[in-house]
Image 1 (cartoon, rainbow, N blue to C red):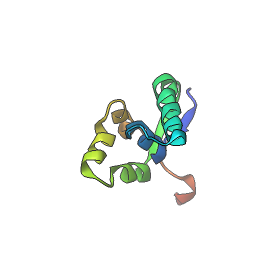
Image 2: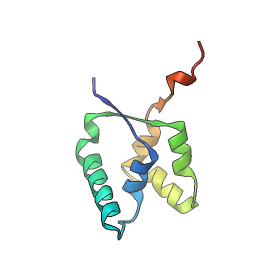
Image 3: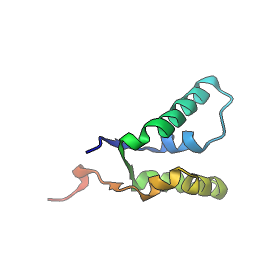
Image 4: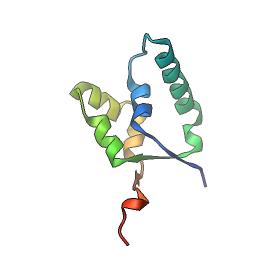
Length: 89
């Protein structure tokens, strides 16, 4: 069984944004893209409904890019993460 990784909105943003002119931001984008390309297949990725909703807000063109840009399409098909503390019983 692969280890699980929760993908949050910043990861999606770093993967789909234009390269930042700010050095630290550009480095974060590059590290994220490298991990995504070279290591994501080693993990079972999860994304919450809240992250999906947040990633889809904003400019409609950018939102479509976040949803359909390869390889991000697979994030939107991942199992939904639910917070066990919110479940009843």
